[in-house]
Length: 249
Length: 264
Image (cartoon, rainbow over all chains, first blue to last red; front, side, top):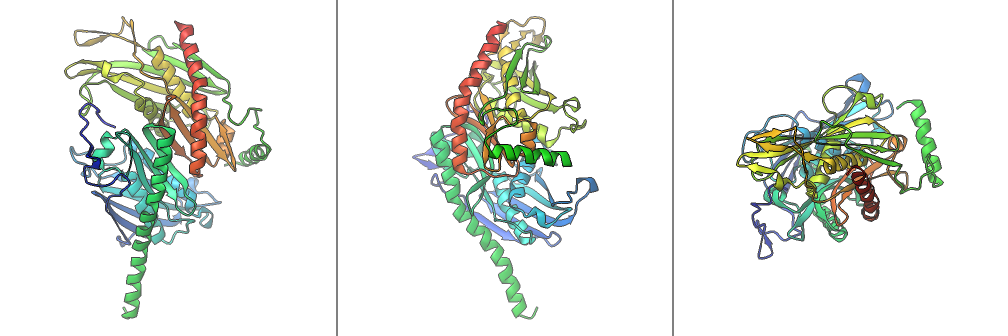
């Protein structure tokens, strides 16, 4: 949603600049259990996004006064590395945008994590954007869900996130950076795939009622692919463990 | 959460299950809305809004600035929100909380996405543009800061006058030109409690709610949305609330226009 004046042509002959169809996801690769110290972790490449998610916990909630005797609390930190974007070096640590993203991400996970199973404790979710290419909050949530599962945190569902938006009147899935910057509207969503409940929803730009409906439908349809890749990544970890066991390692 | 809050939450949910709100409102009624523009003479624009017992003051200041690097030919829109310690017992001094940041950013997105401020008209000369600062001051918290703040900022912008520009500087003693407004947005915030959906939650309803969604429209399209809290919504619930948001837009816009006419 940057400067409309020098907006590049985002669609050429009805095709997107990277050749994708309107409802096509960028290539997505997920790997689970990539960090030794974390209780669970995941690394994800989605288009040119490179994102690392790690989970620590449940551990004793600190400081003491934030602990809830009835349930666990979730802390979430989404952060972009200072070298992650094209262009100038950015200040390290969360800015206002990152603080908002951390908040809505935390709220999405509060819906599915079985908080009552871990009273008095905290679960820390860290999302580090190492390289950004549009849709980083959605990619971060998709990675963090895998990291939570890898940490063995009890959850009602393995959630995913992706954005849909509008370019020149067309509803389009999964913006890359340039589409993200110059689109007419952008709507990241996080979904619980077992019932398609909406756990995160943000939007700005312009949608008619019909466009909104179509965009939401596209996000839900894309969930089938994303969920499968998340599950495959988790299965891969335990397949490896099985081989090790059989080898007597 | 203290014991009294739990009792209150339970009470609110129990009467809601029978279709009743504590203050007797319908599910999709706003509380009493009062808009007073022009309360701060020194600001370029201002407005105080009461939404029930929620009170928000918005002030608009303008200053000559450099443009943002990616938008060299237009003015800047900069929004912030302060949850003042005098507004509620639980608000504390210190750096802005995630809640305050979210509030400012959601209000900013709605107004920006609908091009409410004519930013292109705020270009002065090469390397010089007007920055429009809209600051949201929460004076009393009783729920639904999103709608009260969008309303207050919108009213303050409609009330704003641009200082004269002389010799590369702002002349704050002469403010004749009204700030050009391209469109009017209104936001509608709904809460979900158990199975009930309701508009304009007060503090206790917000405290008992599972989920919150703010929908900002300009009457023709959805301009911004933000879901909050840990509950969930179905896509059909979202569609229903978007329809309601369009209906409510007319009501809010009329209030805004009435209040700005009173001043002129």
